[in-house]
Image 1 (spheres, rainbow, N blue to C red):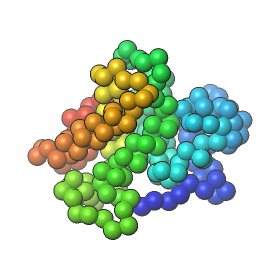
Image 2 (cartoon, one colour; image 1 turned 180 degrees about the vertical axis):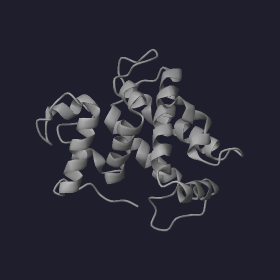
Image 3 (cartoon, helix red, strand yellow; image 1 turned 90 degrees about the vertical axis):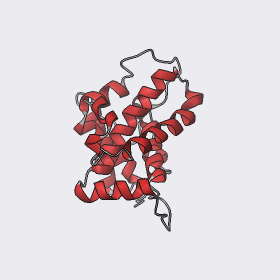
Length: 191
């Protein structure tokens, strides 16, 4: 499952450029290493250093979110809606963490996967929709932000919010009437 981000690969470079274009369509990117990336919530000038935990799929997830649910993506990026904390979570870095959280929840990052019920339910969804992981990522991101706002959380509470996000996503995946990601109650948060 895990493909490491490789800044020397042209397809990985293209994906980064595509993320920039989808995020800031009217703003030209000055380079793959640039202070501009900090605007998106990367930890430094070179976003490739932030992919260590989740790999290339985290970039693909962000790109899918930006292109598929543009309004939700932009609202979260710009921290629109709700009473925001003075010290917010960095958007892009949070996105990488959400990918990693989902991989752990579904036991996709292990060399020898366990057969958990949530994993089995998700794999059934994935067999019927190749975009299930990306859709689940988008749902998890909006759930995380909703919980962030409800708690009036600060940056230091990010891991606690991520844990409660995971618990809520797991609960929703295991509901009897949830047969697709689109059936999850929190899917309705996406626009």
